[in-house]
Image (cartoon, rainbow, N blue to C red):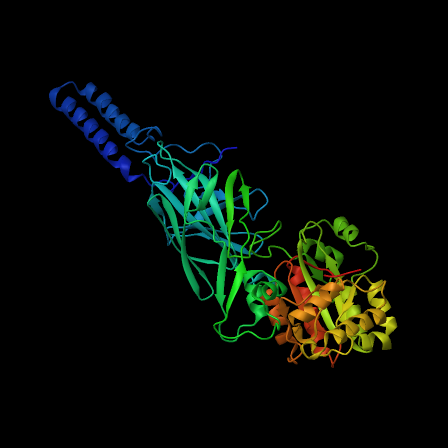
Length: 544
C-alpha cells in the first residue's frame, strides 16, 4: 500500500512563492509583445488579436507547473479525491484504519484533529530539518500528541508518537517509521542532527535524552537499549507507588532488591529495575517501535486513552434505545451481548457491557482480613453486579467461624487464599510457627478449596520464612497498588490511588474484614464503575 503523506501546505488558492518569478516573467513578456505590435502597426484590426494573445500568455502562466519542475516542486496538482487544502494524513495506531486526517492550524505551524472518541490529536509546530537517509534531501520529524478532551474517566493521560517523514526528489514526502512512547514519558524537545532524531524526555521529575537512527526496517535507539535502571527512593514514595510507576510488581521489586518488608524503604535507597524489550509493530504499513521506561512494555490492546466506555451504569428513566444510541451500537446487539430481554425495563444501577469494545486490560482486586459477617456479603453482592471477580486473602480464625462465606466466595468464582491464621507479624515467629500458621489456615479454608497463594500480614516476610512458604508450594503475593483503606475513612481518598495508578496486570490491596468497611465498599463501586468504563476486566489473581 502507498505510504505517501498527503499534504498541501500552500493553503488553497494562495500561489507558492517559488512560482512568482515565472508568473512575473510571463506577464512581462506578454505585455512587451502586445505593446510592440500595437506601436509598430497602424492596422487597427491587428490590435485586438495581439491584446487577446497577451491575455492568453498571462492566463497560461497561472497554470500549475509540472511536479517534476525543480523551480516549483510544491505546485503539483492534487490527485482526484485529495485532502482539503492544508490537511495532513498520517499513520495513527489508535483508530480503526490506522490513519488520521489533521487540519492545518491557523495560528501555529502544526496540524490538529478532534476525534469522535473525545480525544484531541495535534502535531508539534517544530519541523526538524536534516538528512536522515543519506540522499542529500531534507527530511522531517514530527510529533503527534494525543490527549483526552473530556472529563471523568476519559480524562488524564497523554500519548506521544514520533514520526519520520522522508523527502524525495519530486518534493513529496512519505512516512518512513515511527516511535510510540510510553504513557509514563513526556517528550519535551525534538530535532534532527548528525543523521539522528534527537529527543528530550521527562518521566516525573527525571529528565534524560535519547536519539533514534533510521534503519531499513524502522527507527532504533542510537545509544543502545536501556537494559536496567536504578531508582533512588524519594520522600513519601512507597514500594507500591514505585512499582506502579515502572509497571513491575512489588514482589519482583522485593525479590530483586532483597527487601523483606514491603513497608520499609528509606529516602535515597537504590532500587534495581529490570527492563523489557521494546515491541515493534506496523501501523498502516509503517514500522513503529514502542519505547518506554525499563520494566514497561506495550501490550496488545494498549491504548493511549480510554476512547469509548466499555460499560454503562443505567441511570433513572433511561431506556434501552437511549443506551444503545449513546454508545453507537445496535439495540439487538446490546440486548444479546448482555443476555437481556427487551421487554424488561432497565434497572437503575444495572451494569450494561458495550459490545465491540475490547476489555483486554485486567486488574486484580484482592481483599484481606476476612471473611466478615456483615461486610463480606456486601462486597460479594457488589462484585456480582459488575460481573467482577477477586481474590480473598482470608485469616484462618475467621474462615473457621464463617465457613458459609468461604463457600459463597468459591461458588461465585472468586479465589480464596491464605493470609495466616491470626494475622501475626511473621518477623516475630519461629519457623515452626510459620509452618503451623500456613497449615492451620489451609485446613480452615479447605485443602481442596484454597488457592496456592499466600500474602504475609503487613507485607512482612523475612527470607527464612519466605523459604518455608515457598517450600509448601505457595506463591507469595504482595500488591502493586495500596488503596490505603486501612488508614483512610473517606471513599474518594481510598479510590484515588487505584484510579490514578491502575495499569494492566496490577494487583490492588483492599480489605473486607478487620473493621467497619462502608468507605471501602463505596470506593470499590467507584473503581468498578470508572475503570470498567475504561475497558478493565476484574479477575481473580489466584484461584483453585
